[in-house]
Length: 511
Ligand code: MSP
Image (cartoon, rainbow, N blue to C red; front, side, top):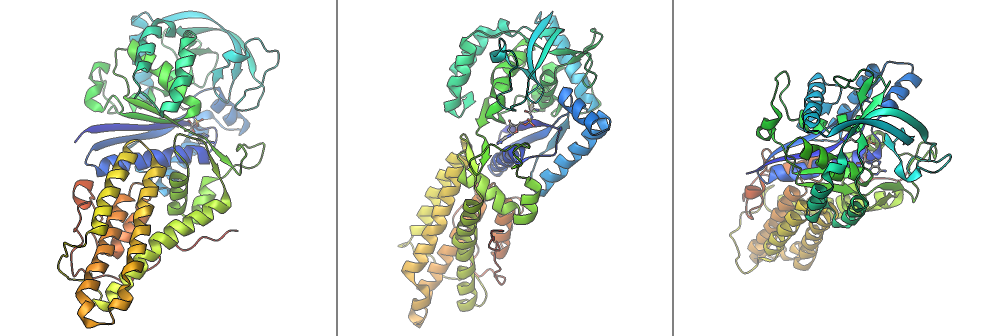
């Protein structure tokens, strides 16, 4: 058993959660659930990033104070994550007082290392990204390539973190092929670093909505210097002063930071350098997943095509959306949300392939075996589904370990299709007409029911609610599932009573 810390980004609270943040959080949840099922002790962290100019301006335009605004939106995040069955162990808010203390403590450590200097920051700034855009340095009226909004010119005194001191160490870190996942994103970061790391400013002047920098009047911490540290404060007990040297006792360092590709540079370059400066251990890996578009277009408020995850959830339910997002898009790559494909895929995979398999097998078992799982002895000549299940288990474990959700879902679905074919080939409905075949039929039905049970246990990290529903319909105890036990073939007890089956997913209809 290992201790595993897993994090999502801490989301900006300028607005309620969108489909992008929901996607990252669902995927991280699936990974956290998978690690727990493997018997590991997981600390799954999510939360919100509440300071900075963007939030201050949004609050002002909503005619409220920043903290009131943050309270409202943070609560929306919390309650939406609950509705999606997100199993986070901690929700960090960067306005939490213990986080503020940690930021001060961390700053002092980095400062005493000699990695803080005062300087002048000039350049074009994107408030949406909360970032200076180096590439636009010489342009006259540049736009942010991500937000397509005008950049703002800044020229002010800032404190700088001496990132340039860490050029060699970061280069060495990037030599490790495991650190940045998926591997295809590694080159982009290696290229960026090879151009030479520049110190970056970590304070803002006269920006009220931030944590004050101790010893520098008028300066507040730059949101990124503040928010990244949320990954540490999420682990520390509140109300106690913890020496940063002791944080490994509390689950540091994370096994993985799961983020979108847009913020890979912050996590794979700036953050490790900050940690090196503070003599703290580095996360094992950083996974930068792809972006979602909608019907081929970038989602954006100005385009009026943003998909509201809450509306989707209320309309289609968590099983349908979680399955679509995780099974149809390769996690490291961009994906396109298409309404028609979504409906077809969910109906085919969940309602037809898996749902019908359960429904018809359970009905046959109830009809021919007095409402129970058949009680027939083991036939060692016929282990087709058992062997297939064993192979599927290996594939699913391997794929989930690498966050290859699509591939894991496809293995699970193949198992369900094979079980459907096995029934069609064996035709128990014909065999049962002759009494002498009862044992053969019993064994056939048991094989399929047991395969469905394995499938439901395997699907648990992806769609926990549907997994529970299937297991309940097999009268299988779904509390405290553990993959070292519950994925053993033969755990479904013979002669277990089967309740009347009901559809696990009502077919979705297009509007
Ligand atoms: N506050 C920073 C993160 C600080 S972490 C210490 C931030 N917040 S954010 O609200 O903008 O969230 C960004 C994350 O949302 C992305 O990294 C990604 O995980 C997710 N997504 C935002 N839009 C997305 C898509 N269109 N598609 C998929 N995910 C996207 O950056």
